[in-house]
Each structure stands twice: as C-alpha cells, then as structure tokens.
Image (cartoon, rainbow, N blue to C red):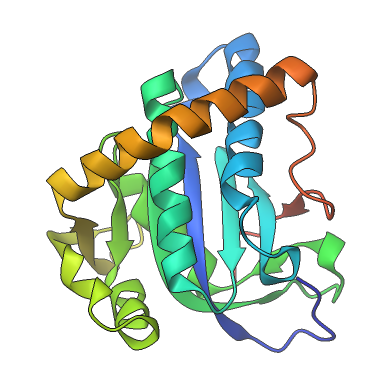
Length: 214
C-alpha cells in the first residue's frame, strides 16, 4: 500500500500473534517466525498487493487490508487453520484508523488505533478461537450486508489499558468447516515455501514495521 502522506484511513487489520512467543527458546522462536512468514505469504496471495501491507510485530505480524473486510475475514480464517499444523496463532481482527508513521515513508512503518486494537483483540484470542471487534463487524455489515449475521457475541473484554472491547466470533461449526477446507491447501503451501527457503519473502514490498502507538 502506497500512501502519499500521513493522513489516516480506515482499514481492516488482521493481527497474527504467536502464543507466548517471548517465553520460547530462541531456536523455537526462529522456527515459529519462519512458519508465520510462510503463512502470511499464503494467506495474502489472493489479495492485490496494492490493497494490503504486512507489518512486523514483536510477537507476530499485522496485515492491513484496505477496502475489503470480507477478504480480511477470509485471510484470518485461513491463518487460523495453520494452528492444526502446530503454529500456535492467536488471531484478532479490527477495523479502524491507520496511517504512516511520522517519517512519512512506507519503510518507517504504520501506526494507528486500528492496529493497536487488533493487537489487543489477539491477546484475548486463542489458537482455536478467532475474535473480532464490534467495529469490524459493523464494517462487514456495510461492505457485505448479511455476512455479519455469522458473527456472534463472544463477550466484553478489558485490556491492560482498562479499555473495554465488545468482541465477536464466527459460528463455531461454520468456522471449523472452513478451517478444515483451508487446512490442506494452506499447510501444503506453507511446507512448500519453507522447504524452498523463501518463507522470509512475504510480499514484493517486504515487511514494514508496526509502531506501537498512535
């Protein structure tokens, strides 16, 4: 995604968090990071490069998706399927404001409440449960009327900053069928990418930095 200036825009953000990443041995961290990068490569492949940007985070990755909440949800569900292959991903989805960091260049990273809230949502998720914010559900309703009916209340959660989040989750049975369908393709592609040694190259633009703060 190329942006001429630092004006904020609304986007869907899929945050992929490796569970308990900081507590793991360095060697295991490297392995999980390589698996994550391969998963990102697979799940973003069907999105136009101009419509998404991949950001590095300390414990995972954030994928900013412009103008396509439905595509963001599909990406999140496909990523969650990787948990069946042993990658402990916690996936949170939000829709909110994002913008380039103060440097004004893509390589300087991005900031915004849209990313920060997605990270908070991922903190409440588990490798078997995808969570998304109320704002994402509303964006889905606007972009693809009717699809939001498949997202059900998951509760109200309070983050470390004492901010509350009303969260939703896909219907468990539907989500499981989708994960099963996505699993074979996703795992085969991930194994192929890692075996070919190209897992570190996620997109033509490469990874950008996620700046924690708006």
